[in-house]
Length: 453
Image (cartoon, rainbow, N blue to C red):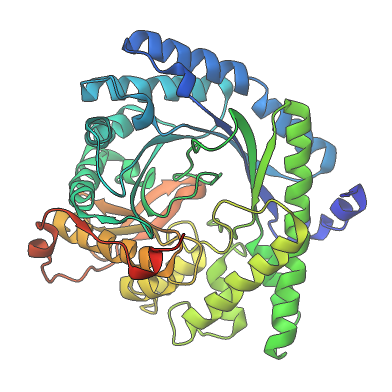
């Protein structure tokens, strides 16, 4: 039983260490909104979202006020739109759905709505391909819509046709939003082994195995973990690990309380708590700074991957003791633009794209919020995606890529998005060609260890 004393104990975390509940995300199924008429479908989507989420923002604000716990974002995720668009025959219809989702998000007051998505790890239906091809226009024409595409899984392998297409789509999305430093790409992510219950954007969607409506919560506390690690400077690994576990336990307990309270007040079931350490551009709210405190001079130095593996594992171990329903991604995020310590490491020359790729083997997700030169080819982007999908497939974990090929920008320049999305230096990319690989048709088969029953 969670009680208020456990929340009071977190006052120091909130006042001094940037602790917050990063998001309450309401998942809403749109399967009952399917219609052969696009106008009727959009009307059903609008009616359902406005009915279910009308009190989401106010409830989040009330809980934050009652318990003194900052709740930064209130968000919505919906059924992957490609799954409800099987009868549609035009990319313009998908853009119309995106605009409907955007208007709903604005009307209920959430900052993002996720689920303009397709799941294509084994192949693409016509609906999947139409949605994917509509992404550049949809993200250009909307403000709050987020898009994701699952390209691979451990069970099914890597859909290389979709990988090739996504390289082209990411390039086009960057060009369509070039006046905003490629902002559309900051709202677009590709996955291997995408979870159905992720509350974080841009990858959130409402899985088809989930209840009709559900409440998922994402907590965050890099600053809290950093402060705890600072207190055991010079200690051995056992004490360091115990300290991180205890801290993750406290953070997750607050998230559990918020999730249960939001579920009770809104009248929809509680799904999961995602206990990921999600950084912000704020000073002291950085995963990179935790790695430095563990013992590396800069994120990217030798030993960084080992330090990140330790951090990620202890966060999960502590969180699992605090909640029976831990899910989503859960661990440590390493986005470049959203973490000032990561930005500093790139600018110092300590952190490269290749080192980040190695770190994704042990973190929560993957290559996240990384800006690259605008002249990076679509095939190179696809090659980077393929590498990351392979890591997820072989290691049986979620991996992802969110790249911003900033039009007109080169190494040494910077992109700026503001808010939680932050800013990022343009990172160099390996210039050697991989187009002959990307032009091959078909699918990379699932690994042998996937055949378990």
